[in-house]
Image 1 (cartoon, rainbow, N blue to C red):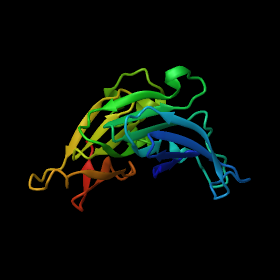
Image 2: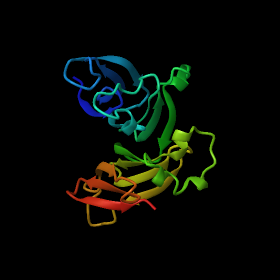
Image 3: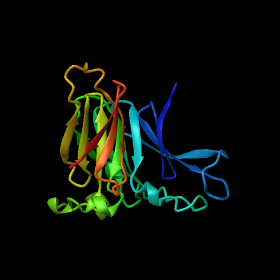
Image 4: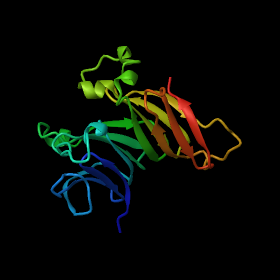
Amino acid sequence: QNYMSTFAVCNLLTSIYDIFIKIAEAYDERYDIVETGAWCKESFSGHKACISSVVALHQRKAFPDKYSAPASSENIRFLTGSWDRTVRLWDTSSSLTGKWKKCIKKFKGHKGPVTSIDVLGHNEGYANLHREQYDTNQSEEDYNLFFVSGSNDGTCKLWHLGSGECLRTYEHELSAVSSKERCVTSVACLDPGVGTMFVAGYRDHTARLWDTW
């Protein structure tokens, strides 16, 4: 039996506990998402364990209003976090072929399952803060984006999407708390207008606000 663990709006990205990611499209007349039915357009595989989190890049641009047509499934980039301790970047662009049409980058560094991911830098105000540090050949979308991952190893990590570099690690500082209770269950990045911060939820019943820089 398969269980859905997460989804993101960019058409629809769903993650189920069979190590696959699936893209689905709603097909009612207005193109907004309603319970009229959907079909699977494409599946993505590569993770070695179940997928716990999915986030679509630039998903805020996908639906300017609820009656707008969704972004084409032929040009979607998204991130997935997995219990195999990695985060992967995927691209559905029809211009890519072979293995590059699927997973185009892997982010390693966590010592436990990745439980949650969220993207910083949808707002240019955040992205420009540290862009001078990087000189990559990635697309403008990759160049501008950062993301945060949370893990059962008790840490959150800040990554640069273009270079694949882990920039900082944020660790639960209370040594009195057991390693199990330090596990990160969820992360959420704040709007860059508020500040370069994110919130992490932990198994010890606490939430912690972190400043990324």
